[in-house]
Image 1 (tube, helix red, strand yellow):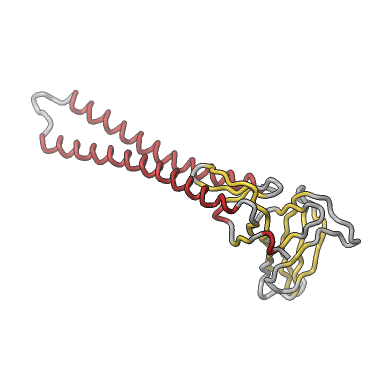
Image 2 (spheres, one colour):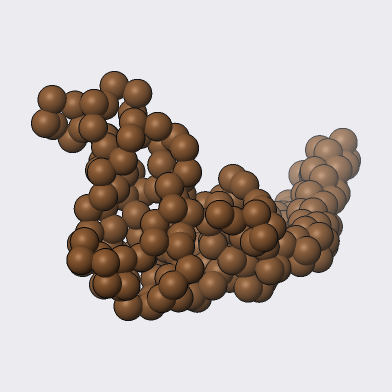
Length: 225
């Protein structure tokens, strides 16, 4: 099962690779065009030289290609600067709790706020809790509601689960059949902000990582119930 760390890193790397590919392709086209134009001028038939208007048109095209390469380089630099500005702005998120689809860290005592979003057509809802190894450790019945649920981290006998990362899946059931199963959003403390390519990545309590753009809500830890 892919972790939030690998997913966020993969998304950031794909974005960086895409920008690099565009720039490399433009540079390659620019260099190829220059070589072709130079070879055409060098090996033209002196008895039938290239028409001056055609040569001027090709020079104009050459200039457009050069400007495109420079523009792409400038845009990439601007994107990097914007990414750094976004990271600086989001440094204020450190210490706050972000709501996103990611593993939540259970410290052994503090409840975790889960934000379920069951299907409206369901008649029963189950919250499936999995540990960091992907093993199901608990099932909790929930009301058919989007109201936040406080998972207290205790098993059916009342004993606390071990500290670590846990994921929560909401199963919407109708007439005994699961009609929708999706990972629930949870509130998790933001520990750090990082730049990966042009993307801002949040490092969460417990080591998970998510893209800042995937956060759907933010709150002060003191507001947690």
